Amino acid sequence: MRVLLSWSSGKDAAWALHVLRQRADVEVVGLLTTLNEAADRVAMHGVRRSLVEVQAEAAGLPLRTVGLPWPCSNEAYEARLADAFAAARTDGVTHVAFGDLFLDDVRAYRERQLEPTGLDPLFPLWGRDTHLLAREMLGAGLRAVLTCIDPARLDPSFAGRPYDADLLAALPEGIDPCGEHGEFHTLCHAGPMFVRPIPIETGETVERSGFWFADVRPRHTRAV
Image (cartoon, rainbow, N blue to C red; front, side, top):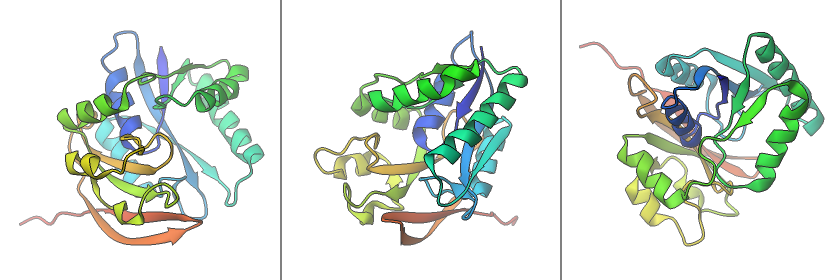
C-alpha cells in the first residue's frame, strides 16, 4: 500500500505515522495538510505553515498542502480535497490514512469522501482506548503542545500547555485525554516519527472565531 497520511500537525496524526511505519505492507509516501489561505495556518489547529514544513522535513516525507478559503463552505472544502486526492492517485497513491480514534460519524464522512476517488481509507489508531493511548504516546517520547482550545469544553488557560502526564492529570472529568471530541488540538514537536526534535517557542494566546489559540513558532537556536 502506498499511503498518503492526513496531517493535522497534531499528536494523533504523528502517532498514526509511527504506527503505519511498523507495518511491512505500508509505505507512507507523503503528508497531506489543509491550510487556511487567509492565515496560512493549519485549519483548526492554528499551526503555522513553517512548522508543518519543519515537521515534514523531520519525518523525511514530502508535504502536500491544500489551500482553503476563509470562510470556507463544505462544498469548497470537499472540492479542493477531491482535487488533491485525484492528484495523489495519479502519483500512485493507493490509500489515505487518518488519525481518527473513535467517532463513527467522522469515519463515515471520510469513507464517503474517498469512495468516488479510487483511494481506500486507513484508520491505524481506530478503536484504541484513549487513556492507554495517551500514556503509550508519552512513554515512547512523543511531545506536543496544546495549540487550540474549545472554551465550551475546556478552560482557555490550557492553551499553550505541554501535552504531558501533568496535563492528563489536570484535565477535568469527561474530557477525552486525546481531545477526540474537539476539546483541544495539538502540535507534535518530538517523537519516534521524527529524526530529531523540533525546537519551538510559545507566544501569545488569542481568541479567534470562538476558539483560543496559542501561537507556537519555530525556535531558532544560535550557534555558540
